[in-house]
Amino acid sequence: MATDYDSPRKTDDDVNEDSIEELKARRNDKSASTVDVDEFEQAEGLELPGADLSNEELSVRVLPRQADEFTCMSCFLVHHRSQLAYERGGQPICKDCE
Image 1: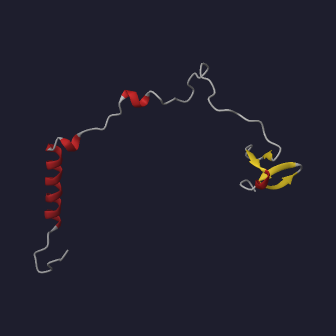
Image 2: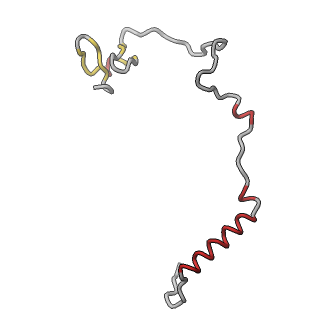
Image 3: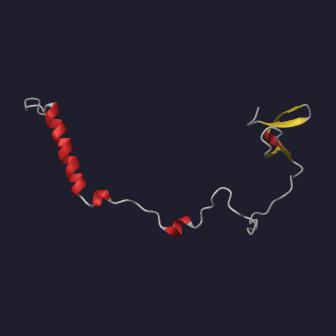
């Protein structure tokens, strides 16, 4: 965009007046003042911390640790043997925790 450097420049008062006029126009504009409200149906699937989950069933099949896996004694996650960094006092440590 070309700039005309010969045109009169706006003063600080002009800039403030423009912004006030814009704010008034926004206030009068009804579409700008709408609030986005979540519907109740969207919030039904959310679980709050401390919610009673006693009637829920586990939907994931849990497998026992395999022969080529180990449990890191730092993060307590099960990793494949290729992720073993070292053993500290007989306790395996993964590469992420080293």
